[in-house]
Amino acid sequence: MGIGAFALVLALAVCVTPAERKCLLSGSWRSDTGCRMVVFILSKDGRFSGSYLPGSAASDPQILTSPLEGSQQDTGLVPQPTFSFTVHWRLPDSEAARTTAFLGQCYVSTNGEETLHTVWLMREAADSPTEDWKATRIGTSIFTRIK
Amino acid sequence: MGIGAFALVLALAVCVTPAERKCLLSGSWRSDTGCRMVVFILSKDGRFSGSYLPGSAASDPQILTSPLEGSQQDTGLVPQPTFSFTVHWRLPDSEAARTTAFLGQCYVSTNGEETLHTVWLMREAADSPTEDWKATRIGTSIFTRIK
Amino acid sequence: MGIGAFALVLALAVCVTPAERKCLLSGSWRSDTGCRMVVFILSKDGRFSGSYLPGSAASDPQILTSPLEGSQQDTGLVPQPTFSFTVHWRLPDSEAARTTAFLGQCYVSTNGEETLHTVWLMREAADSPTEDWKATRIGTSIFTRIK
Amino acid sequence: MGIGAFALVLALAVCVTPAERKCLLSGSWRSDTGCRMVVFILSKDGRFSGSYLPGSAASDPQILTSPLEGSQQDTGLVPQPTFSFTVHWRLPDSEAARTTAFLGQCYVSTNGEETLHTVWLMREAADSPTEDWKATRIGTSIFTRIK
Image 1 (cartoon, helix red, strand yellow):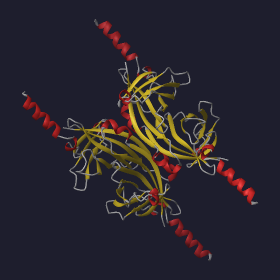
Image 2 (cartoon, one colour):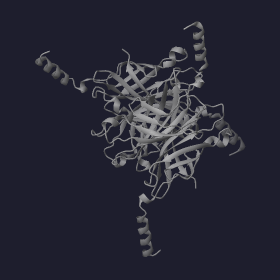
Image 3 (tube, each protein chain N blue to C red):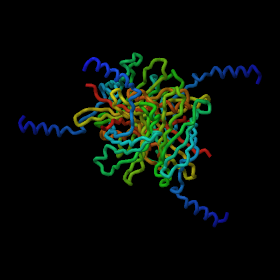
């Protein structure tokens, strides 16, 4: 590659500013705990739906793919948007209803790698306010794109 | 009131089983920290929208009513449904984007009083995964109906 | 009371600045969920021990008073100190080990009322890192002094 | 390797039960976010002290090593103990007091690798109960031993 071509590549590289790399939620993701998630294409107002499959699903036929619904903030305006989504778990009839709310941000690195950093809350239905104190679990999940 | 009438009232009271008292999300609510929230009527699939106003709003003209979007689980099936909703804060331009995700359950007592018990996560947009560790705050809110 | 005496009282009231009202952790406390807690006198470096009794203990003879250990920050320096303490639950042998960590602040109002605002994490022992995601519950407790 | 030798190896493998592999908190650890931690030797009752250094410390001379204090549950009895510890941050005078409480479990894998899985709460001192709702941040950290 001649010096001219090298300068051109350099110029192009400089032109692709961080603001132009965008993190997109739609697609297939895998979490650091082995869960898989598919986010379908986003609507113009940032809403999306998808499906969620826990990591232990492969070995447990009772675990089903569960639907998710969410929304992304400032769609199209910011390169690293925050988002939230909720998984309403499909469980065997014997188990109490369970819901997980994820709150996160979609980051994109200088080499274009996307990661989702999330904190989640999971609630099981309780019988009364007296039992409510133990209803909520907490944790974090980091998702990377499945290519 | 004669014994006959008393027996009738007793019979009616017994007939109204807990399963028939239902906690409904729609309406106006006030939190234990002074926030106000209006939940508009739910759609058949349990989705709802509404508006949220922080407690400090009265004294700070820069705080605006912010929109909320959410969904209730098992609408029409269970008397004390779980739910989740997200507030996308409308903030002065000078502040970083902020989103709060609430996860809770709608309880109804034997005398028909409804309360919402929630745990929430609040996230501020961060610049990179390195800064992500400090992005998320946590707390609880209990809402009672404004009559 | 004459005008002179009134002026004296007023002067004394003005002299007791907020910085002189101090929130002290030692003593007996009751939480908004009906738990009781005793904090024994603090050591000079801010460490303390005590005991904790869950709200449901009155009706369940299997629930025992559990020991707590903690420390207060900036003892003697700040009027509203932050603190942390841990309860190692004494449970029936059939149940998994359980630990709760509280992190809070001791507030004192203008009329001298003390309240402890805390956020807590409760962890049950898990078998392996794969099971760790569901080990931690979260909630809040507000304590007021039992007089 | 003859059948006899193979049987001997098998017998030895069977003898080293998981209960004999123990996860020990004392030593040097590095978190997934680049923080470093040293836990000094534990006392007989499971208490320990140590020091904590944030990941960003290398580039910011204002960040100091901060002391930590904690305790481990069921010392010597269980191979994968739960534990809690608190870091009282040493910060520049300009910043508000800050405390972090970690609650976690020490896991050891079949090949002897130890990891600490923790959830933490971080609190900044607030001025009054009205400001308390925003005082607490949450996150997770996974530590591996520095060899």
